[in-house]
Image (cartoon, rainbow, N blue to C red):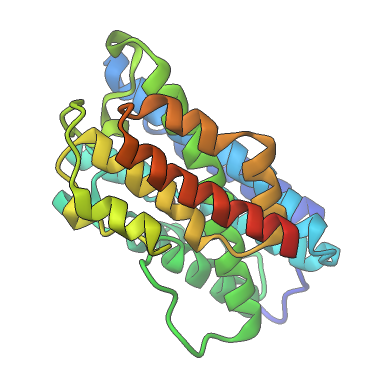
Amino acid sequence: MGHKTPMERDDLNTLKAWFSVYCDSFSSSLEEDRKNYDVKRKHTDNVCSNMLLIAQDLELDDQRTMIAEAVALFHDIGRFPQYQQYKTFQDSISVNHAALGAKVLIENSALCSLPQEEQDLIVRAVTLHNVLTIPGELDPDLLQLVKMIRDADKLDIWRVFLEYYAQPKSDQATAVGLGLPDIPEYAPEILTRLHQRKLVLLSSLKTLTDFKLLQLAWIFDLNFPASFRIVALRQYIDRFALTLPKTDDIADAVDAVREYLNEKLKNG
Ligand SMILES: [Fe+2]
């Protein structure tokens, strides 16, 4: 194939159709499996919407916006084979789902209609969407895409978990809670991290309460003014607070998170 032209709407629609067929190939006779796959499909749809909101707020041109949408569409594609093989969404006991996603895209030549440069951007942004810290010295176009997908993703993961916590156990998609015990105990050092405005390491998790606090700390990793506005609009902090044990220590830590959001809203 010779020179390929930059992505157009039709190309993006073809990618969406391909993704849908790919997801359909992960059917299962088990209701539990179907729920876990459905969680990821709905998550993908919402991340695509969040991505568009961020792209529009940044006033990106159509070209950049479509590339961003493709990154959102494919960011969690690795979740499907990950769950099929390991029945978990926990990377630490299975496989890095972002790296697996990049492999799926390449092995299936999913992006082959696009120019090589666009393919590389999409694959690299998918690969980097879940790293703890973004590597330095990324090309500015890639860096922006990585920051966008990380925001768009977190903005919907909060929704996924709030829905999960609100559901009766029998309706929950099992892989979402990472199998952590749903008990009020938490590690005090996680609250210290919230006061320091620092992310919490996944390796420090022992209970579902730890995990909720870790998710609250994601706010410190958001990049764009639109993302902070969406957090406020969707009332994520207050809704998370309602799921947490009612202790003074936790209330103080949640206040610290609220204060950070308010600063960002003022300065954004
Ligand atoms: Fe992901």
